[in-house]
Length: 152
Image (cartoon, rainbow, N blue to C red; front, side, top):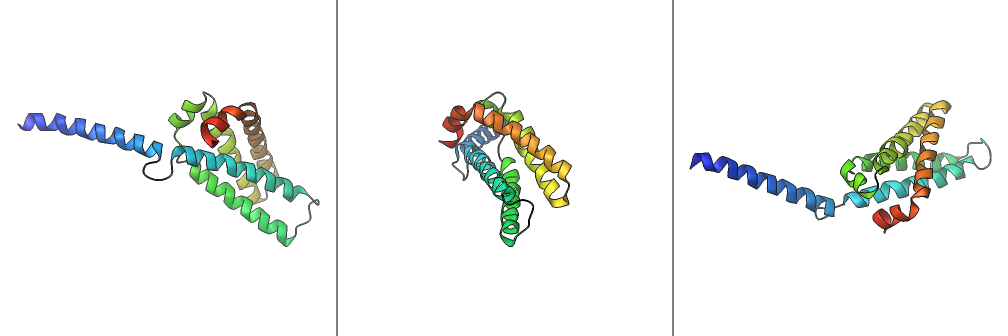
């Protein structure tokens, strides 16, 4: 009897893990990967709008600009955190290049841009913006697909 119980427990554990992973991906236990991914993408679109707003009026700092910059930094931090809840498998299932674009350009670009803002290092900000621009080019080229599979 002892020899048969071990393999049965292993099978039960594997089945439970598969069901749990599927349920989590489907959003049965809370926020789904799709929702996290959607939130990250939408937050970076908002960040782009905020960045454009900050650029208006030259380099003058105002209390409104400082508040907007703080909101933008919080948005980037939240998006970076949310991105860790999106698996490579989920991204690969949407588009073969999405994982690289999402991780290397969107998230890494956001990290670099945030680091540059926090340290007042313009060259790091520019590196981040270049990656974010590469992401935005990919997003625009695949807008319908991304909208259908993530945003909708």
